[in-house]
Amino acid sequence: MKYISTRGDRQELSSAEAIIRGLAPDRGLYVPEEIPALPFDIEDMLDQPYAAFAEKIIGAYFDDFTEEEIAEIVHNAYTGTFETEEIVPVKKAGNAWFLELYHGRTAAFKDMALSVLPYLLTTAMKKCGEDHEVCILTATSGDTGKAAMAGFADVPGTRIIVFYPNNGVSEVQERQMRTQEGGNVSVFAIEGNFDDAQNGVKSIFGNTEFASKLDEQGIRLSSANSINIGRLVPQIAYYVYGYAQLVKQGAIHNGDLINVAVPTGNFGNILAAYYARKMGLPIARLLCASNENRVLTDFLTTGTYDANREFYQTNSPSMDILVSSNLERLLYDMIGDASAVASLMDALDKDRLYNLPPALTPNPGLFRAGSATEEETLAAIGAMFRDHHYLMDTHTAVAYHVYDDYRTSTADPKPTLIASTASPYKFAGSVASALGLDLTPGASAFDAIDKIAEATGVPIPASFRGLKTRPLLHSQVIETGDMLAAVEKTLIKSSL
Ligand SMILES: *Cc1c(COP(=O)(O)O)cnc(C)c1O
Image (cartoon, rainbow, N blue to C red; front, side, top):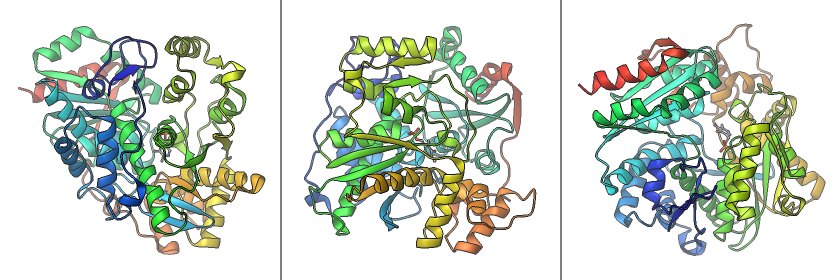
């Protein structure tokens, strides 16, 4: 299986090379030349554990890795790192099934792929004869940084440096990052916002003089963000696993069609469901759910992508995004013409806007899109708990709201899997208010966590217990202009 750029770069890479590179030289994203078929019959997999699904799906895409290599990568990723033995429990509540993707170390779905990526990357480097140490640089608005730190902590041959906006992440997220253990982990708060952090990281990646200085030290920089094909592919496995659980639980017969609803930001998670469908998983519709930043809802219903709009900070902050990078892979798959994709992406860079030709507007029989306001999100959490004693986080609630609208307006009776992307405790302030819990003014997120646990009996994620009192290991706050110096000092000092 070869990997090619969505923007037409001619070079064909092995998956190992594509994982190491991350982004193609023409700034396109790597995609498989062809999407493989499901490598098994679901019926034969019903009693298999999650890891067996992950091995077979990842192996179907990354066929330059040996079976033993894939098995070891998956074993390292999912053994002892998740709180539930099933890894991804599937639970029925109301009239939907929840695919709970948040039982990993940081209580958000990014753990599903970021537990795998460090081992994929280090194995890929070995296969390609790359003897350098790899240093991951990441700018984060909260969830990705912590999940990447937890994934890479103490993985031999790697280092990780994370930048987050000082005062720009939630109290829980900041605590999670500042208490992260691991000899190869560094985190800096910067005096700026997320865009400043992101731009600083981009400029370090673009600094060729610095790259050669690091090269002399035996270090290579890399990125863990969701455009890496090594993050996308592990996510396909859980949709297939979720389908098998519906068969096993008797909700469907093997072969029956289901719908999938996904709370969407950068379009990575829903794209994984799209790939699962192309592999042959019986999915009828993909429901793409947005918060008030409803750029994808508008795009999927009109064919116009328009990021020239007000940016809202919502109670589902991990979906507060106006430019969804992974959409480029969908466009490539739909249009099948890299030069057309390249011109759309140029238009997006220049004008923050593009129009698809009418013939290419995404198939409404496949994609349905909708959005939820902040009030609708909180109302969905409150009603679900009151009626079914099931607790959703704000992101999951956006998807549930959109699904509920869809079901009411279409009467489509097909069972629906909702991608449940975070623990309700991760967004405790909003969830507590959705439940109508009384918090004293100025109460901390930790008070909200305790109140929710008391009121609902839902267990607090193990990684949150003691978070409030765990020692703070990182406390460096730097100016935006000092990011390069911070990276240099961290890497060159510790490599002596
Ligand atoms: C990142 C994130 C999302 C959005 O996922 P994409 O793959 O970027 O669409 C949704 N919910 C939570 C909790 C997240 O952390």
